Structure formats: structure tokens, C-alpha cells
Image (cartoon, rainbow, N blue to C red; front, side, top):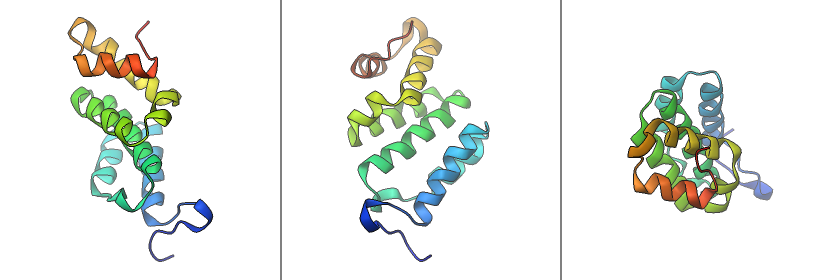
Length: 123
């Protein structure tokens, strides 16, 4: 297959395959591999929703490495691209809650506000 395509609204191609590789690496706990793959991608040819999904996967990878600022930045960028998707995505909300728990009382205001918008306050 040559290049990325969006036939019938079904985004597919090398970039989407690599996004799935990022997701698989995160699921298998290989955050380093996920981040390495993700940093090499240029998802700008894909829909904002697909780009946001990549950022949500990367936020989980950064969280696995306890790189909390990078995880938060990915979530905020994902929210800019596809707010409804981020706010309703179970894994994204779990990542937000975990970031809040790690941060404790010193949670950045941006993170607290994101949690409020997503309904993901720490319990």
C-alpha cells in the first residue's frame, strides 16, 4: 500500500498502522517503544480525531515513564483537536485521574481544569 488514504472515511495507511503500533506498545507496557514510534510520526494528514487518539496513546506512554508534564501536554493537545472524544474516552480519563493522584496537592491548574472538563476528578 502506498501512502495514507481516507476512502469512505476509513483512514488507513502507513501512518495509521504506526499509530496502532504505538497503541500496542503502550498496552504491552513498552513506553519507550511507543514514544520512539510516536515521535517519528507526522499524523497531520489524518483527521483531528485520529491525531488526538495518537496523543492519548502517547500520554499513557509518558505516564508509564512518569514523565507527567509530557503526559499532560499530550492530553491538552488532544483536547484541542477533539475535545468530545477526549472527555468521553475511558483511558484518557483514567490517565487524567492518575496524573492528579501523582501530583497530589501540587497538581497544575491546567490539569485540574482538564479533569473538571472531562469529569475525571481524582476520587
